[in-house]
Amino acid sequence: MKRIMITLLVLSLLFTSLFPITAYAEGDPNIDGGGGGMGSGTSENFWNTGDEGVRVTVVRASDHAVVTTPIDLTNKKPNIAVNFGKVSKISYSGGQGLTPNTNPYPYVNPSQSLPKIISTSSGNGNIAAIKSYFTDEQVIRSIANMTGMDFDILTNGEYKLLLEPLAYMTFGGVKIAMTATEAALYDEQLGGGLRSKMVSLSHKNLPLAMFLEVSDLGYPAWGGSKTSSASNADIKSSLGLGIVRFKENLEPPPEVSTYDYEYRVNTEVITSVTVSGGQSDPDHPVKVTFKIGGTSYNVGNVYYPNGDSQLAWVRWTTPPTPQTMVIDVTVTGGGSSSSGTINVKIVDLSGNDPPNPVADDRNDSFSPASVPSRPQITSANWGVWRPWWYSYWVWHSDGDGGGWWCDHACLVSEQSA
Picture: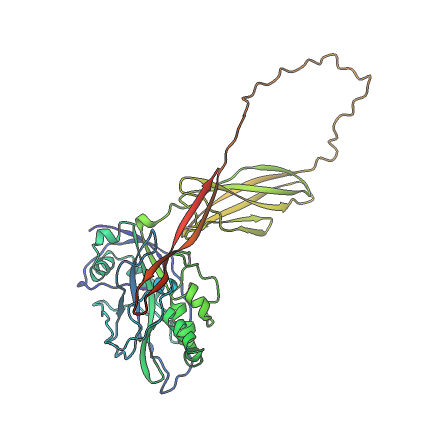
């Protein structure tokens, strides 16, 4: 049985369409989620626990292009009157509009039931079961089969899985299927009409069912509330998604190189470390935390290209009395972390005044020292690496002639000497 390793940046699930067999797996889960507590519904506006699913889309890692038609997975057999088609969050982020669809809603029932996805007052999603699902080789083989991709190609490091929680809700007496992003866009079209009736589901439990702990595919990690309803803007930018990266996608863990220092008392100083390992960019940023004398100093967005390094530093004031100190340094990025220590000696130079020579002082044993011979440096070079996102615009034709749309965003960089 071939073994794979995947890193999970999600709170989500996958499934297997094959008959149950013993499967091997090895993974590093990085998952989180929130929500909980539901309001009371009405006969026209309600949602039943378990009316949920997951939308799965294969995305190319290099340029974030959607390469397969999304598939919707659910344990239910929902009788959906309206859906918005098979559109991923990436496509909506690129400018695609929301289009209601009354055609029969296509979905897939996995043979192995999915874990609980959307948290409610009766319980949260089963994180342990979700981790087990996501590290199962047979699950990934099923996804490859249903999306029409070869398993070895899907897992060769060039692709990622984008996961979005789905809810099947009754709104205005109509059964509708929607992702968290679609709920936010629909609420904007209704001028807040969806939020006013279904806020506990549409703007809390559904979007908080999945979010990233580490930024990826141009979406940031979520640092906001895990229990309160979110705004449409936050849902569209940061919530209602999870990402599965495969072994070759994983960046090497960041490393930190430290140095020991000696400082004077009561002096403003700068302490630096060198960070390296993998590549740090807006998709995989590195953060350095210095813990000095009980205070933590955070340095974020430490960027550097693959195979290179970067300095991170902090400015602080030394204590007023001589002592020895230990500075703990932690660097995080790419779903992993490393740490180091800096030994600092704080000294007081008072009482160690330099000699005060006068004109008739003598030192008959004095002999001049030889002049040191050091290599002469006549030039020095350094580089500045600046990564940023730019929009990739493509022309889409329609009955009225067409227009330019932002298809996806690409990471570019500039290195200058």
